[in-house]
Length: 161
Length: 161
Image (cartoon, one colour):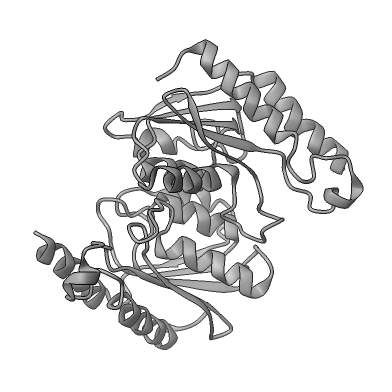
């Protein structure tokens, strides 16, 4: 299911992508969307299947979190909604909706960067993933490149204030 | 937030729609998809905004539950991802992913038909909606036309066996 080297490698790609989220860009035209800069990747056998950024505001879609988009795209690539053997990387601890989608999709490993004490459902705000993960089919690894990942979110919110 | 008359009215529409789910149809061509017959509606001020059936298999998308599709469609109709004041009807108690999406979308009322002891996150299998619903902003009503709604699911699974 990967090792610390590959986790850091893919998380650094994920953080790079998050910096390109619409609204993370200091350009005032794109900044109008106020999109919280979060990105996600799905990897299988150390190859990238799909990547996405948060598009809630851009798409006017409350389900358009990076994790949901990236799961939908990976399913398309594999022509299969069952993503067993895949790893999902995300810069921020997934919320309840995204943890539910991760379980429904049968993803094998979740790796996240920053912890989210408000909405994180991998233990920070809610213990949802443990509750849903009755057969221990999912491995969850938090805090990979935590400093860089949390700095990105914090600097976004401090700019918006 | 509606009353029992309107809840029964919209739930009966929802059950009618669920019967048209691909795979609920006894036609062997469409039955190949094996789509569990579940439907959902979003209503605002007693008017239908959107309707959808479960399309997980058809769309090869683990997030394509009726509730997720109907929330996305309602947001498009209103050009707003915040669905305050809307009521979501669904024939089956929503799973964790869908409860998370309901919270994220700010839907005001959830009305469901059958209880789901395996995946239902409104109290049957998980108490997610209560946990997430810290400010009591969501009203949840279960068991409206429960017999008809559960009969539909049970007859689907007994046919597939």
